[in-house]
Image (cartoon, rainbow, N blue to C red; front, side, top):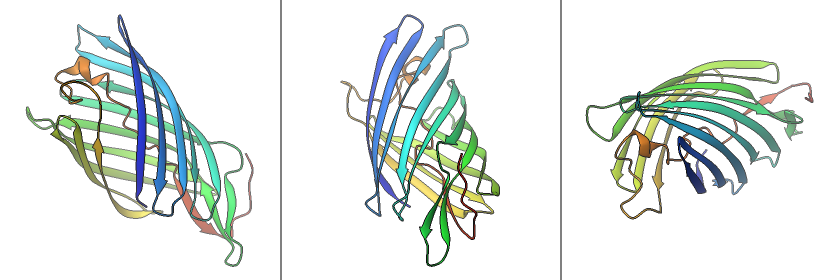
Length: 220
């Protein structure tokens, strides 16, 4: 399911790092709108030349059947010059199962999940290879999967990402995206680890929704 995202990111520099707010609006290929608002704190350690960050978000997405699911998420990122590590947890709020098609007894299920990702820089380039594991569960079902991909800066303001993810529930899926940044006199491409603090959080902002039939409706 493809989507277009408009994002507003604002950061305030502090003596030992920064704080930021991040808001996004998404529109998918079914013309359904999603909203995502969050913020976080990042610390830069000059001795290790690494950045540690914490963040939390509230997400609201609408399925093709018109069901709207809110969720909260939280995570951390540990970023350096050669490798990055990130973990995010996603928890739906309210009812997690809603009827999608009464005629076929199909239901939309908002799933609770955790994702862990590792990124490795390719030589001295501005490209990275990324891999990770994830687990999602909800509506009496669960799945474990893996993803792998590459990302690279095409220009100082343009980032390309492509990859493949797969698990028993959702199958194999190819994903990708082109992000165009606006702002900064010389562009957004970071020249060192300290400048990587200023980049927006790279996370799964769209909620993970499964479709299943013959599910007993549940409430959280």
